[in-house]
Length: 235
Image (tube, rainbow, N blue to C red):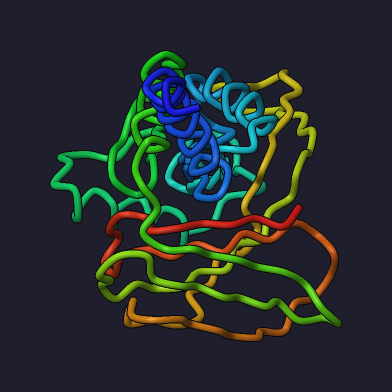
């Protein structure tokens, strides 16, 4: 048996590396926020790309519809000023000179034009390889959302966000740049609330009221529109 060890160990290490990488990707999925608008003619390809990402377990796609295109003839029925404010917050935190649509923000840290699938894929791959900083578990029980977060590294404070989204909806657009088109939107964020701040040390546990049976996402993010530390989803 000892003679076999030098041959077995390299294979085991390689297999474990591949397995642990896949495990990290599933247990610590990458959050992709798309800032989009129904009034933007450049956005439909990015909206379609976000829909494609919805089939991946290692990605949590979220569509945040902004309101600054509403003036050109079509009011986005999903738009919220809150999402425009979030996009501007990312711009300030990242030192970006401008905001635009379609813009994707990957794990709160990097941005890319949302209609460029190769660049989006590269950034998702880059962030999925990062070792998780927090073990985050969420579940439902009796109308409550149960959250448990355990620090895996020396932690820094982070805000805890609860996001509710609608999986899919078709919209017929009658005015503006996309007039005459019927478009399908996915992972449409309806509500985004910051509910608590955790110091990032030890273990955090919380129970919060949760209405309805729709999807919910829990995001742990560094304050001030910083990097996303961890995320988990209940479909």
